[in-house]
Image 1 (tube, helix red, strand yellow):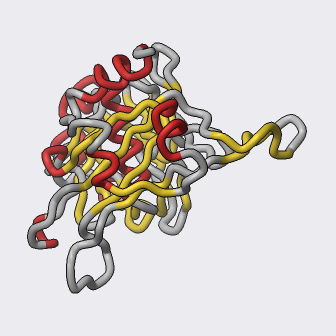
Image 2 (spheres, helix red, strand yellow):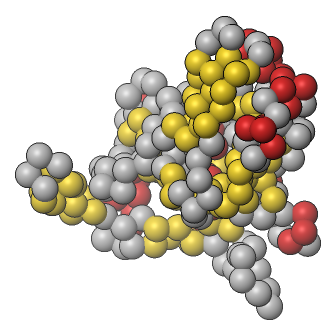
Length: 255
């Protein structure tokens, strides 16, 4: 399944490899392309980092990495034959393939797009994952029944709710008390349990999203570091991707 971003890029997932290209609309807006600079195979990229430079008769543009990962293949044909991007942007005109680090990064990407967060570089030191346009701090946790390794049976999904200190970049140290820093947790479950050949994390119908106030987690689970899917389901109904942005707003404003 192909996913389209607000930046007019398309993403196609095969296992843990995401192929990235631009839409026909983007190609039309660019016009005739005169120069393309691609990343190198082996480059480790961060979500939101500019990895491709495009120059056309109309404008200059960049393509950002949609997720953290490693560049595993580039399409050298489009550098040799620049017209491929204009002629077949959704096919032979793809740009690069990136191996994503983990499903958690993909879950965070899906959620960021759903709630309207701008593209941003992931920061492992930040005390929470995302900030919604209305200022709600969101922690994203993911789990799945199916894993990349051989399984005799599906996993029992669990999610981390571990407390953490806050990192102060100015002093280069952890500060304050260990706590949960977000307003809301979103638990993202890759709920597909069928044949692995049909597992596609870019197919949003294979995901369920649960929204829980951080205050409720603090009250019910205290210093616990993990929570089961069953416990999550006792606190939230499952939401589809188009539903949970409103659920986040509702949870954050509920006293």
